Image (cartoon, rainbow, N blue to C red; front, side, top):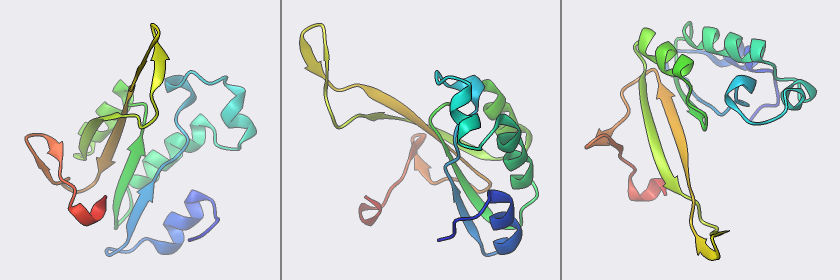
Length: 130
């Protein structure tokens, strides 16, 4: 585990046998957060686009996780021949809606530069994967 800028990580460790799991802050334009949120945390939209550009040039494999899947990301993945999979997952903690406790759902999207395993368009997880 390293605490380095993503540019340095990709440069330093990229080989044909490297696997990168990426969970970057999301684009400002695809979130409900105030625009200053990511700027204060030093990850800008420019950084995000640079990360996507660098991913098109790496030798290794990557799995990019996103909670906000925009048309831009869908087009980027398709243009580069990447596999993508959107999952709808139930939250563990119920929330109160209309006087009843219900479990909300959230979506996760994974984009990879390799074929993601699936059956009936659902991602396949082994029991030991959790």
